[in-house]
Length: 435
Image (cartoon, rainbow, N blue to C red; front, side, top):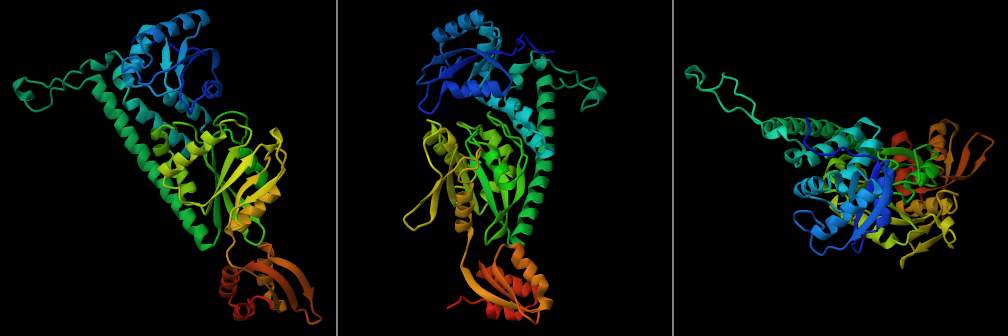
């Protein structure tokens, strides 16, 4: 049923369009992440893309000659192509052609594991496909006969019927509507979970960063989790939440989201909005940066662009310079003019500096900490257990009558909430800073 469109192989010719913020190496990594084998690479400079083929007639002939010589059956461009450009390129090159968005979507489709992740990827694929239906099939302009049951059928007049293109567009539109409805339920569930965490006074920390910066490795290190981590682009795709223990604060929630990349397709951002809202609603963003990458400044800029697009640019950030084991840097905390942590240098692989990162997170999330001594009766064991679960107890002495003197360091509002929760009025009176 497909038209003359050639079948794709695993041998890929890479066409790198030279830009200030792009590298041929990233395109190669994307191809490898998709399970393809790059066999050759051609670079091209274009101030203004050619409307027909993007690269122009002269460079197009070079691509064809190199594809013939390297036996490449698939041509990958690291810029987005219009449906017309893809059709013209495939017709002339007699090979499958994929733009940047199509390649990234293919990787995402391979990585999605959870029901939510698969829905989000399918939505992005359908939105991308809906603009390309007309160039993907030759039979789409054929009309299906009228049913004879429409208006005028009694006089022997039937409608022209709908074309196959119209039928496919209708089917895609229906599926997109269905997926959006299901993702709306996912979004409502996430909102309910966030409200529950807010009621329990549990703060959220979200990992963001350029793909392959080491977010998942850091996530596993901090939470002792087993999220899949690999040295490849988009190794993990599905959102993950785990409990994180912090000094003084007690429990927090750490979320790992999809990695960002240069020119992340807008459709993907829309499709993954339910997941990316975790970053938008977080109390703190850990912006993980590959400190060993020569393009780290470009990567930081690209991540900030995506954060602005999802309206998370105003959420407090802590820059986490990862992979210091690959460069000549020591673990440390860099502080701003007000003494607050602004950068932490770590290695998530070796664990160097992760204690400093925990310290920095606690400092940024902690509000109005007091240090005092509480005297609890033997009947107030539940309050004692809560204080220990928060990691707030610095020292404890037990009296002859069974009373407990607890030297604690805790946020004032948490101690106030404990007193109200347990009906202990004396806690509020005792929760005063020591002179």
